[in-house]
Length: 143
Image 1 (cartoon, one colour):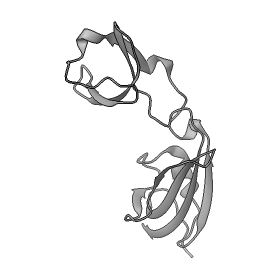
Image 2 (cartoon, one colour):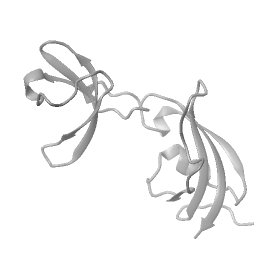
Image 3 (tube, rainbow, N blue to C red):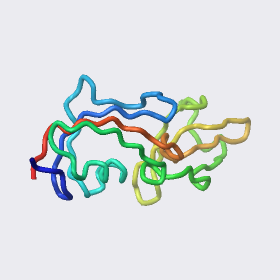
C-alpha cells in the first residue's frame, strides 16, 4: 500500500476544530481539499500529519499553534486615526476589512477596537494563538 511522502498531491476530507470542540472549518458537503505535501500550501502541522498515511486512513491531528497559524503577534495590531477611514466603511468590532500594503499586497484585517479618535485593526490570522485539531481522511494520493 502506498504511503504519503513529500511531493505527493493528496485529497483529504477534514474537520477542523478548536481544543474546546468548536468546529471552524470542514470539507463536509464539498469536494475534498487537494494539496501537494511539503510545499507550504497548508499549515505545517497538516503537511507533516499526512506523511505515512495510506488511502482510506483516518487520523486526528493535534496541531500546536506554532505549527498552525503561529502565536498572536502584538505588532500586527495597529491603531489608526478614525479620520483615515472612509465614512462608508462599517466600524463595528469584528468587521473584516482589507488594506493594501505599500508594496500593493492585500492584507485582511479585523476591527478589534473603536473609540472616538482611533480604530484598532488586527492583521493576525483569526486562528493565530490557537492549538488546532483536525480529523482527516485520506481520499486519494497522486504522485
